[in-house]
Length: 293
Image (cartoon, rainbow, N blue to C red; front, side, top):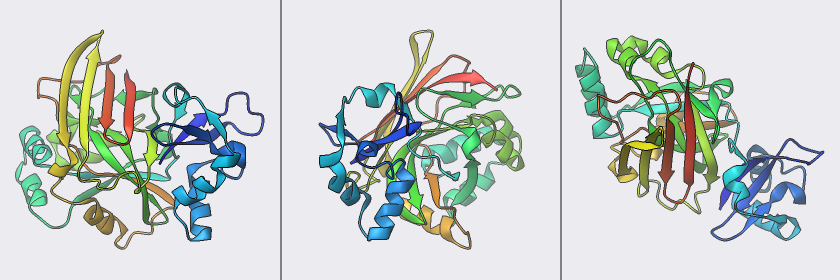
């Protein structure tokens, strides 16, 4: 099943609620119990009962209000406020090639791509992360900014509990100038978007067999379109999570972005007002406009 965080609207008891949807029906789980007011609360209940998140949700469906599925497109927030968002680099051949092309020190990227240890870095904190239909940011001191569509692995207390879509917005000229500038190229206001939902492992049977697409519109015209498959990943989600856990006391809820295989041409840069759309099979569509920060 897929879990959405929605505006609470006229609800007096809560500012947001958690909805669950299958392919045909959507339910407001918070209407069944205010204790199920967030994805984190669902994950805690699953841990306490030694059950899956889907099993906890199914028990409450009969007591939950049905909601119109259109609300899931119009009223959606970040599906979970993760304590941290991490990201992996050069996990696809095209991203390794793009890093080489932008860098004056290309050898460091092939060294990572061909090694067992992946590149992992802290991408965003909650204050730097936005949700669906919010504006992603591009740095005002950069002349080459790009979206990076990625499959996100959702972890709760170190265990994989679902998958989402992430946009690892990046400043390629800053990153390419010197590898030591990577944090500035990656971590800044509105540098990451997450959404529209979290799909559980029961829904995502194989995270390495998902179609992913990226489109960018400017002034009503399509300026970039591309598609790929997560099957192109050189490093599995399991391996990335394993390295992230090593000697690292993870927070309760964390999202790990797994790298991008869709890279716009070197002549392209995001401009304020651009509309970025990312689709991943069985998860949904993440849409954001762009603002300069």
